[in-house]
Length: 267
Image: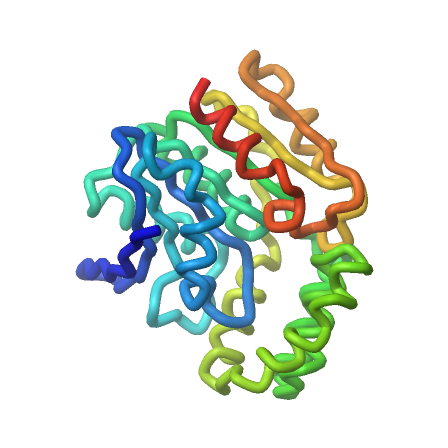
C-alpha cells in the first residue's frame, strides 16, 4: 500500500499529514488523542483504510507541530479547517474519532462548506469538569513522566480487557521510546479537551451524519452518544450504530468498522 507523509506550512502553523489513495472522492480522518503521533503508524493506518484507496484520496491530519501553551479543541478545529482549505479540500467525507470527533463536530459547525458527510466515533459533545477523571489521570502521569503507567492506563481504558492483556507487553515496550517532548505535547493536547462544549450547537450540523459508539466505552461519559443522538435525530440523514464489547477503540478493534464507514460514505 503506497502512502506519503507530507507537511503543510501556512503563515500560522505547520501540520504533518498522511495521504494515500487515488480516488475522486476525499476522505479526511482526524485521529484521537495519543501519547505519540499516529503518523508513526502510517503504514498500518494506510493498510487499515485500504478499502478506501480506489474511490477516495485519503488525508489523515496530525495536530499542528508547534503547539501553543494552551490549545483548546476549538483552536485544533480552526487549524484543521485552515489546513483543508490550504490544500484545496472541500465537500469532504470527514471521520473523527474520540478527540478527533470533537474536532470534526467543530469543523462541521464552523466550516460546513468543507464537509459533505460526517462520521463520528467514540466521541463526546461536551467535557464537563467533573467528568475529566480519565483525562486528568493521564495528564498527571505524563507530568510525572511515568511513561509505562501512562501507556498501560491508556491501553486499559481504550481496549477490551482481553485485548489489553494481549497488548500489555507491547504497550510497556512502546512506552520506553516516549520522549520528554512527546509527553509535553500530550499534556497540551489532553488539556485542550477540558471545557469543550458544542452541545447547544449540534443542530447546526445538517449534513448526513453517522455516529458510532460502544456501550462499553470506558473513556467518555456513558450517556455521551445518546446526548449527541438526541440533538441530531431531527436530521433525516442521521444514523447511530452501537457496538458492544469493542471498547472506546472500536474504530481499531471492531472487524467491520472500516466497512461500515465505507458503506456510509459511498451512499
